[in-house]
Length: 278
Image (tube, rainbow, N blue to C red; front, top):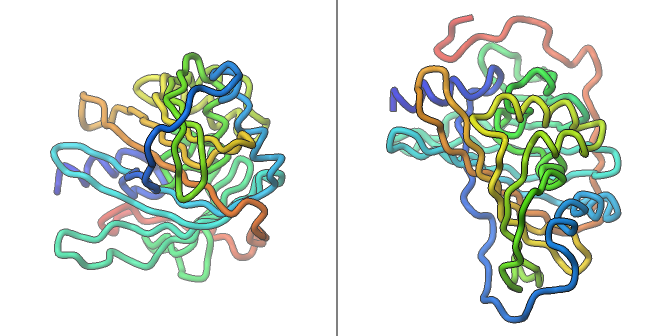
């Protein structure tokens, strides 16, 4: 576990959470032939379909494997795709004895910023920590322990190759399964202003800008399930660390009233490092 703690600490300057991505839904059997439309074009437009939908509920899962140890973090909440605002409750993994590490972290996702409550590390329980996502080497695709749902969708704007796998079901919804590879550099150029800088940072910060993915879209082109496989090099290890991020979107149109904290509610002090040191 000492090796894993070192890897997790290297993943981000903010949360040091470790990451996970077990699948959020089970898929059924392939039933029909390929739909009309070029898969690359369909996937590049998937984020626009979410904006048209307005909002949804979301479940996230991040999984990191290194040194024979696997760490998984799960989140659940809502997202407003038009305002680019989201709220997630992120559940940290249990320790080896099965005990809960600490209370869930509440995260607010906003253009260019990540707000966290119950951060720990010396931060008062009633205060928020604000992080500029443009300064993170992964663009906050993994640092917060959950991938921003709209940022995850905009990764698909960089789709370079894709194939239609078949028709199936995700959480009771009929979907089309696509498999392909996206390039973060191309995604950052075509992304919305809210995610352009963050995805550009990820393109430079990961071990490779190429991101393999599996995407499941419903008949309206909305993402129901999206699984990315990221790769980064931790400063303490030479070999890349594999991170799988899975996002499940459902209940489109659900209320997503997300209010960002006021200035006086944001912690301005120093944050202690893991182990209690600053």
